[in-house]
Length: 134
Image (tube, rainbow, N blue to C red):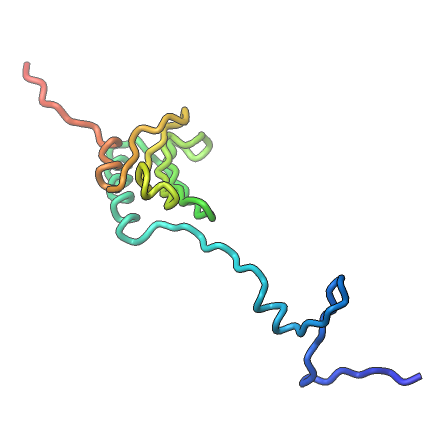
């Protein structure tokens, strides 16, 4: 019996269940593409980190986490690392044409603000300082 040896230049043929032959290069080119990951741009991160920095300086926040997924990007803010997030700042491009891609969500799940402009949405996290006269 004669053994079959493959060389480096011969194409590899794959056989599907129905018996049709396909080359490996064709099989790879027709494979479904993986959806891209949603992330924050540098301008968005600057705006978020500006608010975060002010809150850290005030002693309100101490830690954060960033999660990039297929559907949305999430920036979570913590008072302590072992707790649940106080707020999550979400970017969901699927909602961009409707209510706006950006939202701030409280720990209870309540959406505090949603909109198209990130800086305006982040304004809900800023406390208004009032001068009290004695």
